[in-house]
Amino acid sequence: MKGSSPLRLALALCTITTAVNLQAPLYDALAARDGLGVGATSVAFACYVLGIMPVLLALNGLPERLGRRPLILAALCLCLVATSMTLLAPGLVTLGIARFLMGLGTALTSAVAPAYMLELFHDRDKRVAANWVTGSTSLGFGLGAAVTSLFVLYTPSLTPPSLWLYLGAASLALLLVIGLPDDAPRQRHAAMLRLPAYPAGALPFGLAILLAWATVGLVIAILPSTLARHGLAAWSGFATFGICSCGVLFQPWARQLSPHASTQLGLIILPLAYALIAWGSLNGVLAAVLIGTLAASSACYGFVYLGGLSGVLAVAGERQSSASAGFFLLAYVGFSLPVVTTGALIDSVGHAIALPLFGGALCVGALVVSWLLRTASAQSAEAQL
Image 1: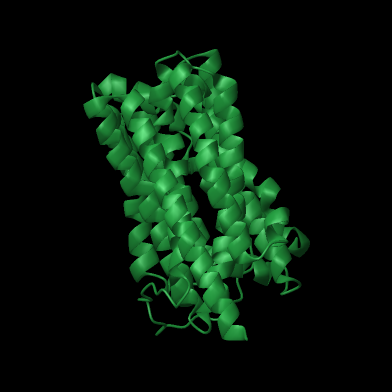
Image 2 (image 1 turned 60 degrees about the vertical axis):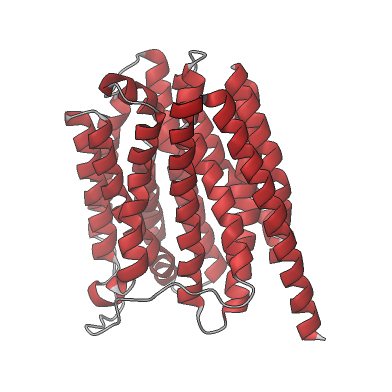
């Protein structure tokens, strides 16, 4: 059974992240049921980040104190509870509470997954363990939305069979994780608080992932309402799958580039891809939306994500843990605040104005961050001379 341990953990990680966007194709229908607008939908969506922040900022010492397996089990239980809530009482308030619980689960998973996978591979190769973690989680973030879309296309419902299927899959994953070995020593007095930090040269990478994940958040939370104007809301799950899960295909290319080059390439692709997504959704051209989300994913989960994180770790020195926390703090700020702001704008001025305004801000942001990256790269080159 030991040889199957990495696969069992990967299945658990995929199951946890599958829960996160399982209800994404239902956002517009849930808002319509409650008589609420896109702004309320985006707030419910952003509750996910409220669940992540406490763990990211104040509970980073949990793995050392409690071990790794208990945190994965806790994350699976949180996802089971959250999904059950959306089945029993579908609505935006329930969705917000559920996404808060899923945020807690995702944060617990992020805190422990890389080190746990490396342990199960018996320290064979850090890159192999990292690839299993990124691959399984990236697949999960898009898989739930895609499966829900398949069912909604066939029979529209606020409680599609995909939610019931998820409960069965998560229960199976729970049983598989219970038997996993967890030999890491417990440190009862390990520090819980590890504040984020931004060593010299790290901030531009954090700002880049902020822009990238703001685009991801907009596609997940707001695109369903835009597509609904053309009767295409049920297809939004495939757009979520495209922007969340397809980026892993570009990670091998990203690894061949320097962190600065990879991140800058992503910042070139990102505004162009968003323009295609916005044009396609406003005009009801589904093919443009799907192609745009695939292109955006290459930036968001390929070039900017890997390049940015590699760049932060390269300049962090001995502060890798706090520098990584700083990187993800900006990532989740991007995943929430711009989405909520755009949702409120849509309620005020409509999709046709709000989406281009987001695109304009994205273009300006990409230009500024690209300049900061070039400056940081030139300073780094001078320091090495």
